[in-house]
Length: 327
Ligand SMILES: *Cc1c(COP(=O)(O)O)cnc(C)c1O
Image 1: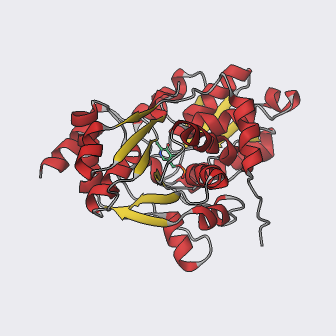
Image 2: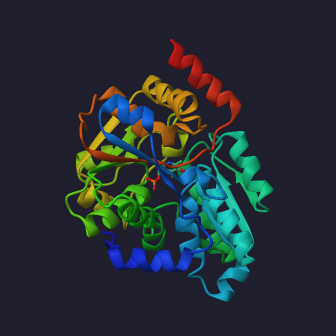
């Protein structure tokens, strides 16, 4: 049995102090279009404005900043569907550490190129997140690199939780938050932060239909492997780890409801961002809008925040979404 590692509100405050001035404190803006459509106050938390275009910089900075100088010298590695890899590459470059980022063949080419542009080596290996992770493990065992986990680490999760502190400062009367759910570092961290400040805030997790590892794991009561499938929300792919130590227990504790959304709903949500919000975001970042639409959530009169988690998308993927949304 793996031992569960807790993440406290205090850990999240410590993370905030550690990453201050490096990760952006992102704006929370009102969506006039969504507020009108749902007769609510709907806000967008713009993690797309991080230097790497996604929130994962928060966790990566918190984790790498905690390493000692000998570890920094041997370098860092990780397996990532893209945004975490970019975050580790960026944070490592900042802190003067070598980085090797292991990614699966399903990861879009633009994300691999972005990692290389940040000065890290991108190692493309295997058909799944798990295959890429095996290579990262080997680099740790044989070359002494430090493994920076994508989500299942107390420092990573606490780093992502700093989003929750900012939400509660900018919108103290927050009623609900909608969060894309994959490994659960994002949802677990934000959930711990917002509920630590106000336990009444409703925490909603959103995943795509196929390959939603956390939701399938919660359903059976322990972490299970799922088959990875292509999705417009490619950043939400991958397993949660059969030896999950942090996020499975944390998500089970802090998540009130979860929803799964279809690919056409994700496509329409991406087009919504483009046409109504004038923003280009990836599928995983648009998924809150997909849940509001597809599940016809009644949020009338409430203050609701959507985590716009990243903008790792290329033109071809957006065109595919636009065509799907038009059908
Ligand atoms: C990683 C990621 C998520 C999901 O975060 P987890 O901590 O794995 O649940 C959501 N959106 C984007 C853009 C991501 O990169």
